[in-house]
Length: 328
Image (tube, rainbow, N blue to C red; front, top):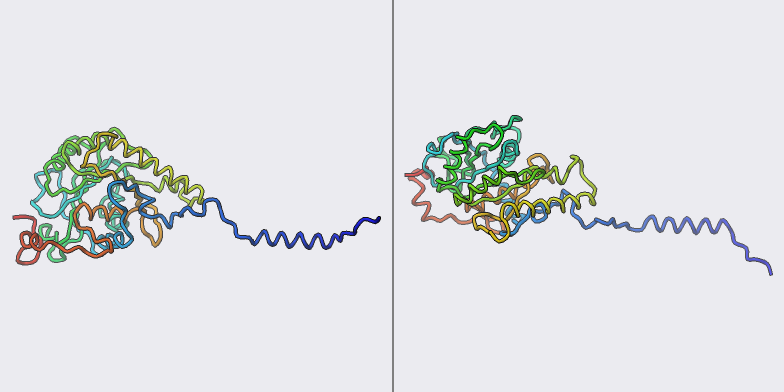
């Protein structure tokens, strides 16, 4: 009985068809469900425990609040006694020298090029408390006439450590302990280096002063983008997990288990003044702006609408000229 004849040309044709079928099949990478950097959301970039992440409408409201008007430099002082009376809510920023505080403030104010907050390569360059006004009345140029309805003040305190002088620290402590207008202190911690002993000392001062405070992890682009290039989806996934682990470690140092203090907000914000996400937005900046508005009581509704201002409060604090005054 003769063996069946198999045409080699037919075999090659079938093989080519199978190869084309395999090559055109949809390939699903193992990390396809992991969001890239351009789609990072407030909930997977930051670590929220006490408050819900802001909605897109709320972050848009916060962004417009900080970018629709130019921030105003109000005054500088090395002494707490030089602060004028005021009814405007105040937010302060603290951090070790060279933690990136000035760069973050410039990004927060949408002034990365004009350097409203002075940036220096030399640690401890900021030696006084600098006060800026955001969202105030457009009338008037004097500091006492600036803070308008819905306005707030941002106080940039000197960096601690390195060459910072002890007397500057004493004046900052006086401000933290005695300023009734202070709504919240934001403490910057370098994401790469974590909480240092000097940070723990400041946290102790904040607890003793009864000052509400919250942690900001700065320079998180060095965690998510360690080589300044867009990582693969797999690598980005690993970096996000690393950032989450850092947040948990920092939270443990700031708020030890079994010793919860209501003045410490457990939400940890993650920011970068260098790395932009979609449409040029700096990483985590709009969520930080939202947190400032929350602390000042100026946040929007969930749909991004401006909340109504208490008219009774305005009658007490706004003068006949319609300008929010610094006090009696």
